[in-house]
Image (cartoon, rainbow, N blue to C red; front, side):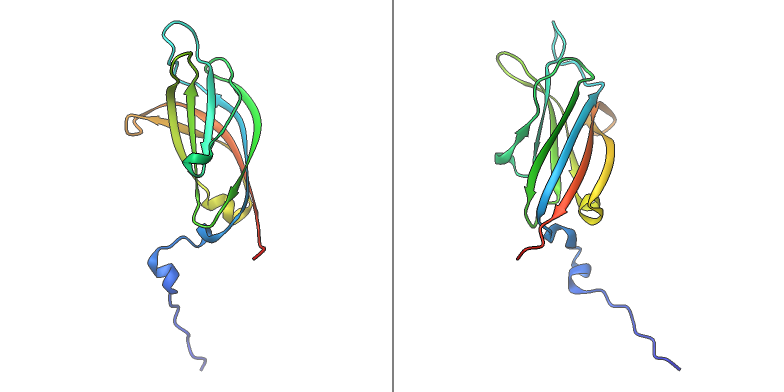
Length: 149
């Protein structure tokens, strides 16, 4: 009769530490469009742009567009270091004197780090504890792991 080997969680699994967060590599973010962005201008229409970052001092920004359903069709590249497993995305309305935040979301990179690519999808920009939203951004992600030491 064969002995049964018990399944034991490793220290890392038991601690809840995200193993995928130890990966590093290139993250390609394709910003396709935004949908139904809340209009923050009282007189005219939105002039939205999108900011994205893994760490705040290193933001990347889309070009300015017009309207509530802008098409961006831009690709950005970020270098992901171990411990970085979230992409922050913020929609902003450009104004002459001060920019107005339209909405912000956080995208987990776990799926794309595991599979290498995730299909384009809409990410809602929540408002008031997620009860409603300020529109959405359509983003596709691709991750290329850097396996060098």
